[in-house]
Image (cartoon, rainbow, N blue to C red; front, side, top):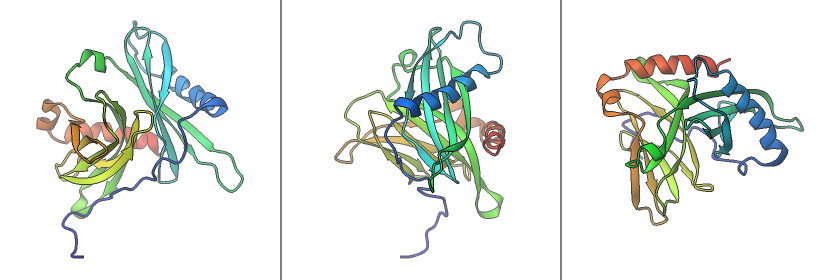
Length: 226
């Protein structure tokens, strides 16, 4: 094969290894996620109480496993975030737990044009040629339309991660915002036909360039390194 034109981290994360959390394991993750929700700075007065927590497929990267979550609150907001830990191995239990949570008022019900309901957080970085840096981004969500089987992340029309739907939910870890290219999330059916695509950015975000994402990414990267 000839050398590739674009040198990128592709499929850098392990695929999902476990079923969606249940039982005592779910209780452990739930404790971490709700504690992170309690630490949200300056929440709105009408945020409300968390409802049922929905878990998304696990993905592991750089020795840590991420299990994302969402929860609709009684105030009509959505909590979103993840629990991170060092996976079990060699007879030892999972350890080094931490969690991140935030909120949004932008929900699928308030955006009937959405075909994919997405959440995302930068969890690290990857340095490429000539000092260019990609924001390694955890993306999770669900299709709002039916018929999907697999979801991909594409950067400059190159697939950099994919995940089969598990109970209509997916999780990706992919490089983003690299050399002015931004990832797109695409949904495909069982025959490989594209059903939907969504960007992580609004039109204004794309026009403004990398500065806003860089500031946000730096904050999340620092958190991920703790």
